[in-house]
Length: 560
Image 1 (cartoon, rainbow, N blue to C red):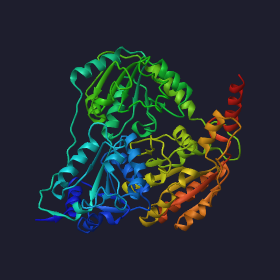
Image 2 (cartoon, rainbow, N blue to C red; image 1 turned 180 degrees about the vertical axis):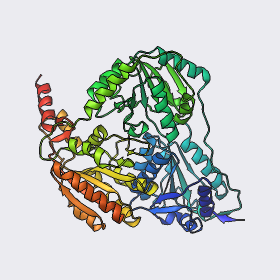
Image 3 (cartoon, one colour; image 1 turned 30 degrees about the horizontal axis):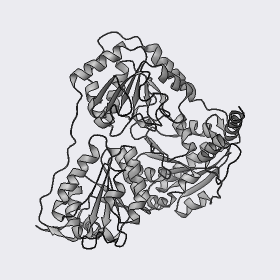
């Protein structure tokens, strides 16, 4: 039976198990939109701007390990969505972006909103393709799912010319994709076990994407059996339970000085899933490139990532899940005596959870530390980018695979769309978005999605009236010569109320607990967003650090 391209495409998505797509409708892919009428199992989430839609799809990919699906129109829709594609690329998140395209009869004439998407996205996507024949849609969609989830996961971009979507074809559908397994070789496991058992100060670093609950549990058991302290890589706080006695903190921006030194003192580092990028390694100083001071075992799903930046003692190309399954079969062959090493790192990490002193009537340190008592067991914290994110990542004890969503690419405006995506996927979960005042305003329009789909999320907007992170950089490089940083904010509480939500200002530490409880109660009762505007002294730029201290240190260095 002949079907148009839109119906063929939606049938493939249904076959591959897609249950939700994030979109901003556009005339360039009308047959796809029409086909949604025939596929009620696919829930279209209508977003307010393409960057929000792309972020939601990316967050879905993080939460589920399955490709997040996003549909946008040609030209401006694609350029707006590109930030989500770049996020998925650097965060190794499976995602498929469908972009409308002009028809083949006018292609390559710089038609209205025409862009060569293969050229545009080639450096920020795993694969970019334009489907020029209707009958090849099933083939390309199947390939897209396999590419997005295989090796190092990432985004795929598919351009959909109008004549491909309007055209008809009698073509067979393709069944749901099946990820390829990549178990480590038994000899590699034997060698790894020998390295671990002969090390005095080993350290396991976990990160990357497409974990599962079973993989998390298997790795926790593995760390227990082999007495391995565990750290999470940059913004991968969900990969290991922070309450576990082997957890020793997170690497990257905001890493404690004690952990930094312990990493340097380790004689064996096992990196699982993580690329060990610039942020995780603090510009390749905690673990030096190309030749680390520690023996390095690098376990990563993409062979191209292995030995490309670091000279390793051993490399294993396998997925996190497949390695975790194999690791569960291992048991020590001799008695290990590293309890003191594990305890040292754990005790030093616990010291970092004590709130540091700060100036002013509101302490961001105390506020985030309080969250451990205020949050139920099933929660998710989302952030975008900015110094405000240092506080939840330092103090909140993340406890599971979906307890944190944070972009390793450091893109602003991510937190609110990610919170929406999480609440859609896990309506029973308490979802809290941390957002700086600048970060929040990059995608605040997506509050309309929270209203439309009855999502009771809580948003904490940290209002200091400046681009704080950039101010800290200016003070460090050009002390006392800050410029182009201040802005005037709207009433964030009134803004949320206009979306039928709850708003309240908090400017004292002692007022936060009751205010948060009111906000959460409103969100849960009314299924509407609740927003707390947190006003604080902009001099408090990071845990234990002020802007004036940065300035004075920089001035002293310049004089020297």
